[in-house]
Image (cartoon, rainbow, N blue to C red; front, top):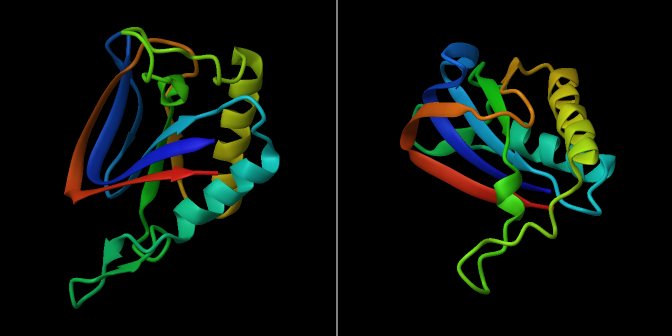
Length: 145
């Protein structure tokens, strides 16, 4: 399971000209599910993101979690994170989880975050989305489990 996370001042997802998810202060999560991923990986990733100290304290150091700053998450499925671009000119998605398993673990991840008490907005699984965000910092991390 892979995630690209960005500290944002705002982020939104639009599908067919309608905003389906939006947050202000918080974390934009692009989540990729791969073959072999399971609930334990989703739990680990959710806990890591929720507790990662990537927000500034009063001294300007990254020392606060999204919970501590009362932020939110916007979680968007991103199967292209499983893409391999090492050979040829077309990415290979051989390591991506099948759609039904990807959706199940994506939804499991979202519920895991909610159980930790962090507000969550989402995109819509397996549809064309337009994602907009204002990266704060910029601060971006890549997490993989």
